[in-house]
Length: 326
Image 1: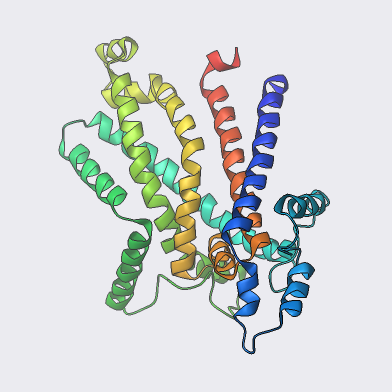
Image 2: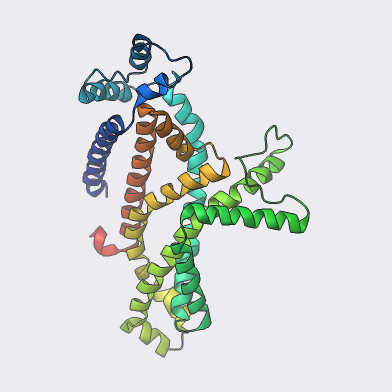
């Protein structure tokens, strides 16, 4: 197992290095950190701007590759540089990464699990009302942009809270400011804030996973061993769960590795709309300010999460398919 995983890990590390290099070069070419200082009132002198840029490692008189070399050397020692305002990128990353990981983890688990179950349910009831309803709902969700879906959920939460006469679903921030009490009350507060952002991230995954799982399951229902199981008295659902579920999940592992970046993209909109101080909102703020180091740190985080999702998908594929292990 370790001998098979080592080449995959080596390729992932190489891809990570290439991704970071491309991110740094593109961010340096597309963003203008100088404008962040020159737009101040009163406008600083050119020498002051040059000094500020040099202090954060963004001196535009130095070639991009040379700047990347200095940045990467510090990054190898655990220092991701300074933000455009002089703060530590490491500190900002540590403050925000937990927020995004929690949102992505919940969105991934809920979206993947419910999407697979919905696809199985629709396939077993092919041509019936549940199948048609799931098809309509899935394409409706897929056709709505993520930020529109988030705004609709926010409006729905406002209406729901108004109907019940109490704020049960929070729609702004990660938690209530100055929240005190027992750990259960704090957990309940954070959970109420998590509902809408997690639903925004998970709904798109549920819609897409259900479509792929339905197609994979329909191909499997015509297999000889499932027809034999049904001929022996098992219902289509029981035959699928006992003899076909493992096989139908194999294509979903590959789709999971490629679809994880879509989850991260959805979390960017969710964090911005619902006021979550995560990696997505940080990326937008850094891009607006021309903060190259912060943008590259977010790109590094997204690359690591996508590559880890790919490694997890490979491990799941080995667990599901004995032919891959052999």
